[in-house]
Length: 137
Ligand code: FES
Image (cartoon, rainbow, N blue to C red; front, top):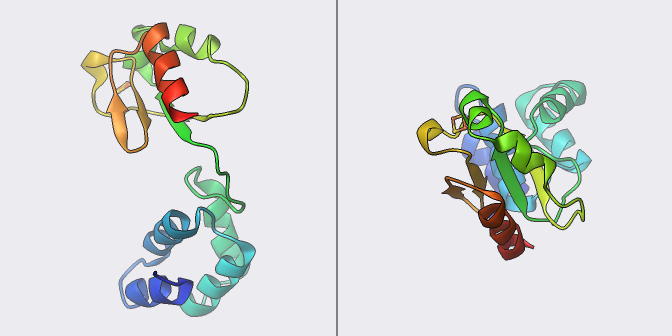
């Protein structure tokens, strides 16, 4: 299993290593912890504030792991035109699935679309979205 040091070492010699390191740390540990921020900053000769600023800027990075499954719902223009806002308004607020907004999944003609567990789900309606949420929870 890849350690934090392994991840940093794998990218440290590359140009612009910070984002690839953060993505790999997030994928491996489910979070970019304060400990990881400190180690990354030391390895890349950055301040902790610089690394923390990047972590807090991007929604894909979390300082504390959230074990809930994630549904990324496209709320860009084409999906809006196909009714995503009505779907979003009908989402349950039980908190079992973390719903995030994403802007365009590249399948605009078959929206409304969402991504979950690495798969894109197209042509969503209320029933399909509810079934998807149930399958994730
Ligand atoms: S606008 Fe939703 S997939 Fe492009």
